[in-house]
Length: 470
Image 1 (cartoon, rainbow, N blue to C red):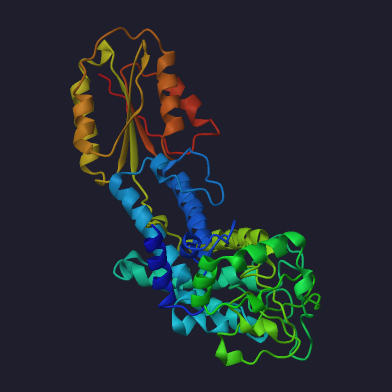
Image 2 (image 1 turned 135 degrees about the vertical axis):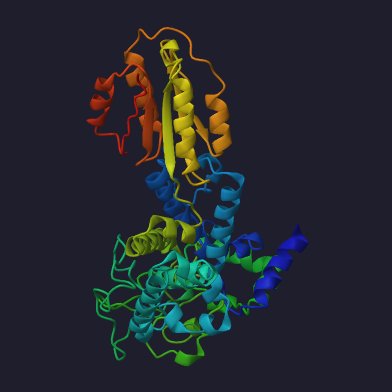
């Protein structure tokens, strides 16, 4: 296991000379506490987006997953192939959201990360352009089926920049508890960016650490294992600060400078650093930093605000996906992007009493004709009812199995309980997805039940009634 951890770390070190915000680092260093990495944030935002897709399109009734909860795909009645697709797409997005911290051309560009104060407007402009490119490229399913990977990549990279807004700028420090809906959408971010001639940060000092923080610092620094691994990251404990109230500009947006971003070196005097042990700019005026990237001051001087920044970042990621869905206006196409499927669904409520003896053959033939014109991936529901009650509502994804089930019984028994029709339809209506076509086959003709059901506020589907009578 230890060898595996080293291999994971080395794989990232081969491609990154700065701290890449990925869960892989938590596998090799025990200093991150409750850090929500870029890929952690993406995974939970995507899970909630997928859940809401299934809730809209197949009537999923399970509770919505909590933030950072492992995505309960197995509870969502997905087939083996659907489960595999959902996992694959999740891993793709988790990788793509990390690319700006790994790929050389992206990781050293302050525009990709909302870094270097004067580049804040450039970051936002770049996001707006990327957003327009994504939205325009996926208007039609035929346009994206062969290019879905590159579209997910562009989405992931854009979301990385959006997430960095909350951990790299002073939005959180200014007390905002909600996301900034202008990011990536409006050229004006709602606040002016700090001016080049105005200092943004005061100097932090080493003695600002609490006794508990100092003890944590000493524990990490004294570990030979930690020193070896952190040394591979071009890390220096001299660059580690805990900073509180070090931002001195009010009502202006600012962000930190990072040493690997050569295009903005050297950091201007009086400006904020990103901060952390891998950032050598935080030793220059003003020492310290404002990063909230991690739940550890080893990498983030404002680590105590990490949870707030991460939660806002997740909400902003969910918003991005929702805006994408609304812009596309096509649930099937949006589902393809996030690894989910939109189903056609049908439901059959069938009377099995003796009154159906002369009609059951016609019923079976009619159902078969409907199924012959239904997509192979349709969801089919069947409810059988008689005077004694109604069966468990069966769900099928295989049309021949539906027909086999309908041939598995012979009509028998009396039909003296009119209320059972209503109960069977109501139970089916509560289970099936919205907009499901429900077909009721009975000789009883109790239309009152259907009329009454149509007036219910909690029925969200089109109701079709077929009465097989002489």
